[in-house]
Image (cartoon, rainbow, N blue to C red; front, side):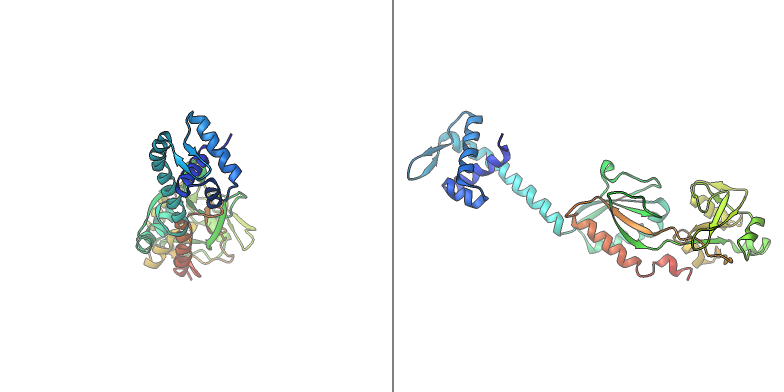
Length: 306
C-alpha cells in the first residue's frame, strides 16, 4: 500500500508543475511511480482528479475541491518540517533538563539566567531529584549525572571532575581537635550519608584507588546531604561530601577542610547525558557547550578548595 502522505505530496506537485514527469523530477520519483501514486489516490477517493489529454493535465471539479482541502494539510506539513529543521540549527523551544538536587540548586540554577540571555528562544524546565530518571520515558532532553556512569546507550559528555572533601565547622574542630590521619577519624563524630557506598554512614573510603577504608560512627545519619551539611555547620561533627556541595561554605569559613594522610576519593565526574540521535536539537548542544565553558578547565567549586 502506497503511503498516503506521499500520495498527497505527489498530487500537490503534479498540480503545481502540470505534468507527471515534471512532478517526478521535482520529487526524485520516476514518472511510473508518480502515476501509481495518483492512481492509488483516485482509487481510494473513488473520483477522477485529473482530466488527461495528450497535450496537458487539468483538474476535475473533484480535483479542485481536493486541492483546496489538501493544500492546507500540505502547508501544515511544510511548516512542521521547517520547525523541526530549525530546531536542529537554532537553539529554541523548551529544554527539559534534569539534575541531582544539590548540584542543580548550587551549580546549575545560577547559570540559567546567563544561558537564557545568550539563547532567548530557549526556556528551561528544570527538574531536580536524586534518582536516575529515564530520559525517553519521562521526556527529558538532557540530564546531569555524577559519578561513574553505568553502561547504557546514552550519549555522555564529561563536564567536570567531582572530588570530595572531609570538613567540619571551626567550632567542632576547636572543641574536639583536628584529625590528621584517616585512622584518627575513628575518635570523631562522623555524620553519615546513608545513600553513599564510599562515604556512607558506617564506612568512609580514601586513597587514589579507593583502597583505604575506615569504619566510622556518629550520632547522625541521613539520606539527605543538605541535612548533614546543616548539622556540620552547627558544629555537630565531620562530613564527607562532594566539593560542589560545600564550596560556598568553605569560602565563607563556616566549614573548614580537614587534610588527612590519604587523599579523598574522586566520584568519577560530572556528565551531561542525552538520548542517541544523529541530529540532536540545537538547544541540547547549546546548553552542554555553555556549561562546559563555565565549568572548565577548573570548575568553580574546585577553586574554592585548591
